[in-house]
Length: 159
Image (cartoon, rainbow, N blue to C red; front, side, top):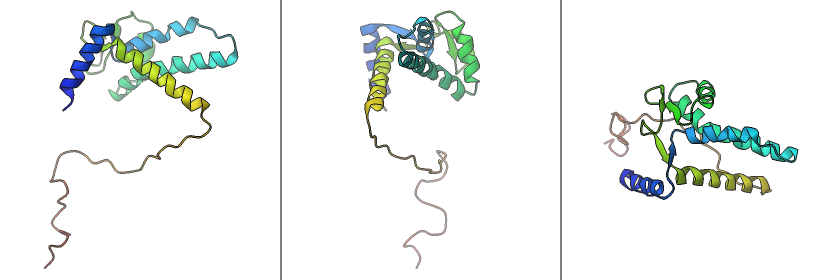
């Protein structure tokens, strides 16, 4: 439904600021830069470590969702060239840019900025209200006619 507008917006963002390897690869490679940064105090080092772990998560999650071992994929990619990433669809390591697996730089940058903003808000807020997740059974799509039930219990049809 929203594929066309999404593609158009992504293209505009890419034209504005360029592209980076997709699939979390750009953030993963950026996390290596944080290894050389040392804070002046303990709290800064904790913050750097939190950011390092957080920006490695997209690549880890993509690999895990594809049925691969996320930590193994992440460690292998950390030791590889800049554009090499994990193609979760094919289950292999590829040059992400050549394979067409890219993200607009603006999208990645904005996501990181917004995440940092929310994290800052959460650490300075004394009270927060969240909605508790409901334990509802997940229904498989397809099969049957939704809302019609089976043969019995057809409410109001019992004569």
